[in-house]
Image 1: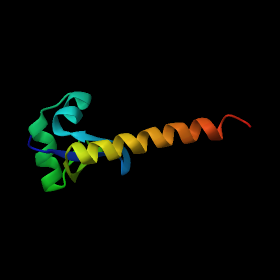
Image 2: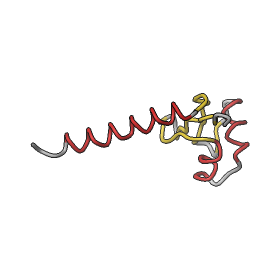
Image 3: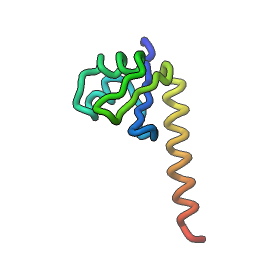
Length: 83
């Protein structure tokens, strides 16, 4: 399986999301090719969104991202449990 290219999505310079061009295009209601083009050219979409090529994802990196998300979720639960 060919690894997906992952893009980071920024709104007014603040990171808000990341994902494949298809995933981000669905969230923003635009074409997937726009994501890659804007990331490559460093352009701003709708005067607020910028895209940065974050590299390739494969099963190994996806597992690492899932682990990190799970870690953050559990850590927050522990910290807010009020022991």
